[in-house]
Image (cartoon, rainbow, N blue to C red; front, side, top):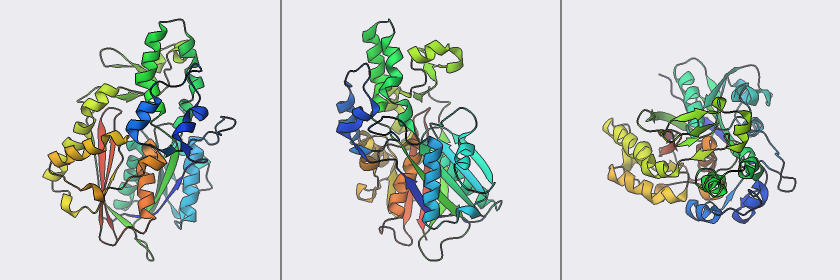
Length: 381
């Protein structure tokens, strides 16, 4: 089989970084009331700045999701990757701008790339890495020589306070409504943000600088074991099943905020580390896919600083002790950008002076949608 190399990486982050105190002025308040959970969530997630594709003055969108991805691809070309030689464009996202056409086709349409194969990967945080895995598989099999993958999010478009006004204005039990917003919807407004990343991969390493050889991408879904945890375009019922948006009337879409992104926080805290860390790492170590002591850099995409110590404890419990001085993350400055996060984390390390030939990198990408996970093993060459 053919070796596959990450040759270049690039990111695009829209507008200026947004500090915690400025978030609500950009996203907007719900029912003209400050969020009751904002400070609690921000204290827990330890994010200090993030980026929104929203003009802070007009509060209008500045970029579509497709445009964010296209701009990352443009930056990839500026960084030295021959984007016009790519034979495949694979794009992952949680938040496409539309239901149809597919996200990747819209990204392609925002670029000057030649006619090429295009594939869209749906999902949440794993969609960006799955796009890279598709490109990796196509090159490794010898079908193509080079490809571009992207991960991008424009979550802010659906997080603005005005989107929730029809719900809070309905004549229902307002106390019950506000609790629902607090625990399922308002929670994520202070967790998620916008950004994009692009990776150029090929069957040859760079001749004049470092490359990253992709040694393994291990992914696993545990959706058959647990109910849905993070969701949008649907309502979660008391029995744990999902009722999709097509089963609601357009009026209910507004009054129930059906298209908002929601999180079952209790289910998240109960299962996220078991299904995305303990079980997969145990399997990987049993299969001798890597040795913890050989890992020089660990790049975790955890959604919140709240999980850092908990993540480390579980890793040690399954005999995968990678000391925290080997960890690299930029969550506090770049925010949680879903499918783009691992791109944005890896790009910062890749374009720094920290990497040395022969070092091994382990990337960790969990997804709480219905509990799935992935780990990527890289070597600096």
